[in-house]
Length: 329
Ligand SMILES: NC(=O)c1ccc[n+]([C@@H]2O[C@H](COP(=O)([O-])OP(=O)(O)OC[C@H]3O[C@@H](n4cnc5c(N)ncnc54)[C@H](OP(=O)(O)O)[C@@H]3O)[C@@H](O)[C@H]2O)c1
Image (tube, rainbow, N blue to C red; front, side, top):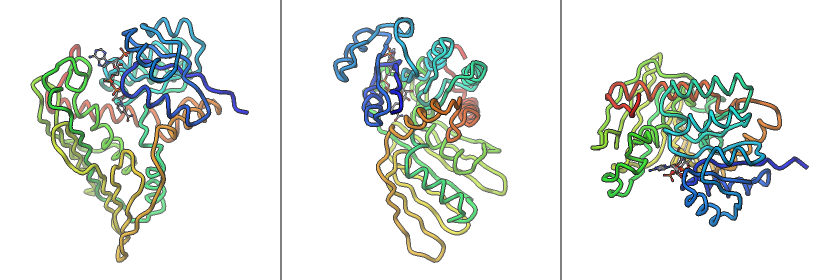
């Protein structure tokens, strides 16, 4: 029997219980402890999940617990510090997206992980879902010829009251909020996967909230040979959440591409064909972390750290065009 992997969680917000349940579903590990900056939040997480060992300090959890890995799920602005805290304790980390606030912080975390030979990965869960695996396989076998264009939209309507709350992480510059880092990172990472390289030219526009972070942003990425990606993300506009990959010999439409269950492929001269791929979930990324830990890999070949760094650089380039900075940058 494989030994059960003991996880700690940093950040006891909305996503933490989802990780807890997905980990249980894998049958490969358990959350043994969780930490928050607020003991009340940590206790609430404990009540919801049955995790008894909860802490009001990240440091205290790391001091007291025997862990094999840590899932970092606090705000984007806090990811780098939390990841470094764990890595400096010799602990592998799975860091929620967006990996950090900017490329400088990402490079620091990546360098530390590599120097210490510890596993580190951005929790880009979509990358590991069966529908994404199918898209990759279809592209690799040339099912739609050469990819020429990607369009992708990821829009999530946030409750209007959030806009007036600067302490809400979604709209907070202090917590590196904004649509770009929160949800724009999905289509950007998708473009990186589809084209297999970073864009040569990046242009974008943003509609900023009064707090100074983007509530809507649009990006055009250009690649060699006239290939391009047009991406949009928004907290206030609605668009079908889908990706359409166009090739020289057909196209692939992926409804709900971040958590897709199926895709529709139309090969030149053929009728559209729906391919059922299976339910998405965090379980796939968690199993990949476990596989890497068991095999002594310090990076996942499916979500390499260099790609994460490129995504952060792309988002830095967009923010530079909009003059969108976080405090202290
Ligand atoms: N993979 C996905 O599908 C998915 C979905 C949603 C979010 N995420 C990512 O997961 C991370 C957490 O998201 P979430 O939805 O769980 O966020 P959340 O519930 O708003 O907050 C998560 C944690 O961030 C810290 N935090 C949030 N707002 C704060 C504030 N105003 N003041 C101080 N600390 C604050 C707290 O950490 P402490 O408890 O440690 O104090 C909180 O527990 C983010 O990186 C997000 O982008 C991923």
